[in-house]
Image (cartoon, rainbow, N blue to C red; front, side, top):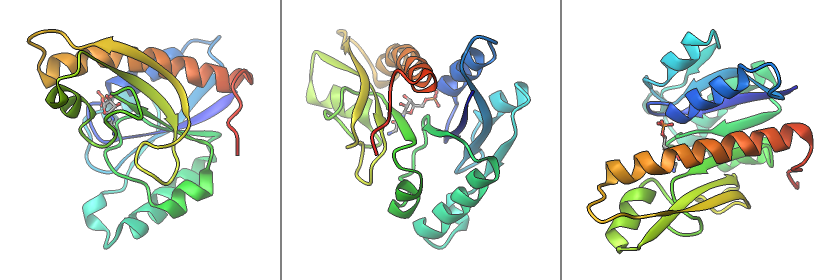
Length: 193
Ligand code: GAR
């Protein structure tokens, strides 16, 4: 059974989908802890599923490095096999990425390498593209630059807002993420060091 730690910043709708998938007895992975960099509303999903949570507020640490050290300390309590960034809106410091690499994956609401960064949906709309996408990648020490594990195209529709487009992307992200986790758990997908 693959054990997962999930890190979030926001509403955690993708986290919830993963929790639901992992609650089925035939799913080969379990979420063992959910962490956040702030008082994220999505932590409530973990509590509902009886999963332990931790919060390491970014703004209460003097540097990204100190914050990352505390996140790593919390993660190490649970010794997760895989760390899933599911809407964590902070870059982990390189020391933390190196410590767990390649066992950190990230979901991103764009067809990487297109539109990396914190505003993947907004940037795609601003660029006027007719299609964007969803991606699941391995985290490296760049910004959304790691190896791509899964991705899918999604059309941008006339009249789309950042919200409407993002809400169409998220279900695809969930499907890709759950599939990637399953494939890692079963050994179909091996994360290269
Ligand atoms: C997801 O679309 C995720 O890919 C994105 O934040 C959203 C979180 O939604 N992450 C990034 O943009 C990271 N650069 P959720 O909190 O409802 O799961």
